[in-house]
Image 1 (cartoon, rainbow, N blue to C red):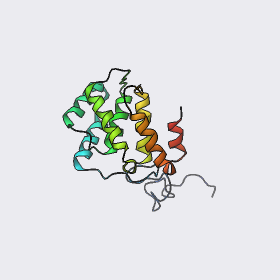
Image 2 (cartoon, rainbow, N blue to C red):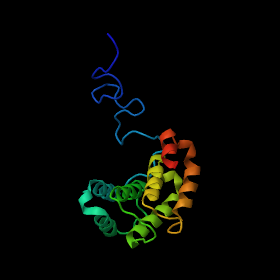
Image 3 (cartoon, rainbow, N blue to C red):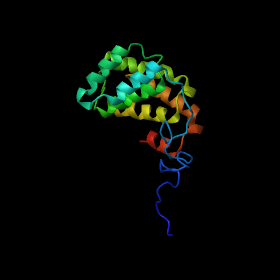
Image 4 (cartoon, rainbow, N blue to C red):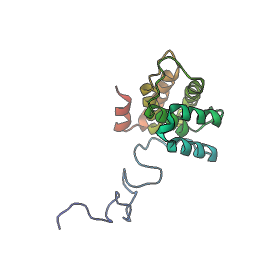
Length: 170
């Protein structure tokens, strides 16, 4: 009998009748934080988000900035798209360091504007975007986004889990 893993049993096995019924199981949309549903995603946002996540690292940050420039006005973009773009830029090694590309500045400004609607952001995307902005070496002189992240986080704090809080700490 012994315990251990048994295929088809429990929320972590996709073949199980219990799949997705426990925290962290195989659910559509991923696991992790339960910090609110966030804003619904339009087909245009879904397409852009897919292009952002599938962009090869070899195209580098400039390729991603070109894609964002072609996408046009990001002020109405879904928070998932904004957080994803910031995260992807940070993974590609982009560093702001006081010299802001106009498209990157537009992305930061759009993120700051969207943060005023904190209920549109899941805690996971809020934390990921804040972490990415810090990793991108954006200074408080470059943007007011840090204040916007602080205000949005305080409004959503009851939805944060331990991992979210850990990701926000230095």
